[in-house]
Image (tube, rainbow, N blue to C red):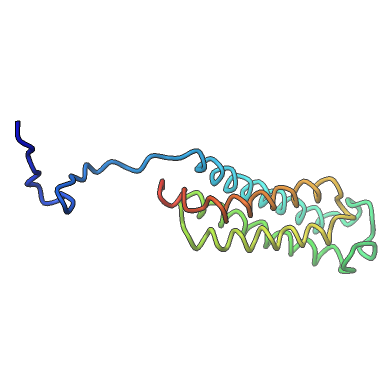
Length: 152
């Protein structure tokens, strides 16, 4: 038998046919999905922290002067709200495989870690959890981010 070359217009150069198959997902794609879901979760946590700071100043066990940055809880509330919304938007973009969202996600995760370190006296358990998750998000987005772009 002789080898038949494809005469279709979408045939790739050098006789290799393009079959339109999507690239296979690798195991690392799971890291990116994890990062995007964690960004969504951190965004929701930020929204809740922000709302609690705005609605009830007595919710947190220290006064605003006992925090690393002595700013009133209203300002902290708006910081958490804005950061939460931005993390949710970036998480959706990362899930879609958007490179710009990946870059913004790394920046926002770093900013979220810093904000939560400054706020850790008010919510110690949440602060430790959020900072840990932010570090994992930064790792996933910087090391394995290309996997999701190829898969999406």
